[in-house]
Length: 198
Image (cartoon, rainbow, N blue to C red):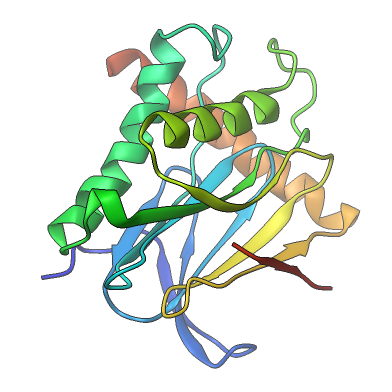
C-alpha cells in the first residue's frame, strides 16, 4: 500500500499527467507513474528511483542555519532525517536500497543576508556527501548558481526536466523558503540526463 503523499495533487495540463507539487519540507514516495514537481531556490531536492522496479520519490528540504556542513552536528542530523524519511517510505513500497539512483537539484544562492556564507551551497554539499556515504549513485545534478529552478520528475522513466525561473518569480521563492527556514530551526533542534527548457 502506498504511503499517503505530502504535497498538492493536481493534473498537469502541460504534460497531460497526474502530478504532485511538493512544497519546502515535503516528500513523496510512489509506485504509481506520475509527475513530481517542485520549485527550488536555496533548498535542494533529491529525486530517487529504484532502477529495478521504478519505485520513485522526491523530497524538498533545507538545512537549518547553523554550523558548517562539515560539522557532524545539528544540521547534518536534520539533513539525514530528511533523506531517510524519503528512503524509508520507498523501502516500504518495495524499493531496494542497493538499487537506488539519484538526481539532485537546487542549492541556488538566492537567500541573501543569511548568517551562513551560502546556505544553498551547504544544502548542495550535504546532499552529495550523504548520497556518496550511502553509496547511492548520482546520475545527474543541477546545483548552485544564482537562480531558482522548477523541477519535473517523471517517475515512470526517471527523466527530469528543469526550468530556470525568471527573475520576477524569485521574490515568491525567497518568501516561501524564508518562511520554511524559520520553521525548520525548532524541528532541527529536536532531532542521468537533465533537460533544460524555457
